[in-house]
Image (cartoon, rainbow, N blue to C red; front, side, top):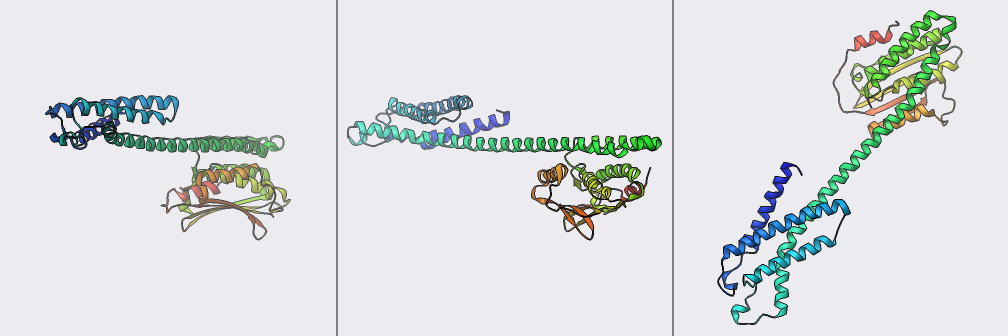
Length: 361
């Protein structure tokens, strides 16, 4: 228990039992069989109430941690504390009815009534104490559930990224494999580009989301490698709105779409084709498109591990605020990511990025 909560506990404990002693259990002198020291009576009531409930709370919390929820324990404690107050009243000669003052003898039923009267003042404390514990335990379970969900989400995202990285690396190496025999110089240059590309991907490795600007630099390195491989068969361009540069996307998501477009679209066409990456932000909707020459042969076919992982990562990061579609429009395949995002300010040097994207080292 922290210092703050411990201090608050004692303030509440002492305040409650002062109120109970001085207000709820404050007797009238005419109800006593004989004069008695009122101060002593009230002091004993206060000390018994504070000490009994304090030790009860310590014992209950310990037993709760060891044995879980208990029902009988608070019931027994309520009856015992009520009995303590009943015995205090009996010892000091105080009765809570006027029968003795009226000359009427007390019966066994009267003592039973006195006992129930004592329990009435006790049960309020136990009720509030266990309501507080129930609320605290419910909050603790909600926090544990939230932490478990977050851990599960993080583990699932890491698992998805681990599935993507080997696939991504294999395809990058495959892009320069053919160059090692026919053009060793270009192969060395391609390996330099691959090194830069892997360095960027490792930088992204520990992040669940990255800026579009960082993602596009990765894509630029990847397209540089593919351009060496496909030469004139591959033409690519960028249409990037400056206000989208700082927006977040799952790492290697655009690269995956570009890779898929080249592998299943442009790469299967003898004449090659064109590839365009477009980003836009309108009415709080961030739209990201990868458009490539080709046709969507089977719109209901399996999209592969990469596409399924992308959809899962979008769901885990953005829930229902993100969507992914793969369609065919005017002899071109359009892979589109849409994310609902709050209004943002323009961040990033688009002119500098544009020169890097269009240059070929």
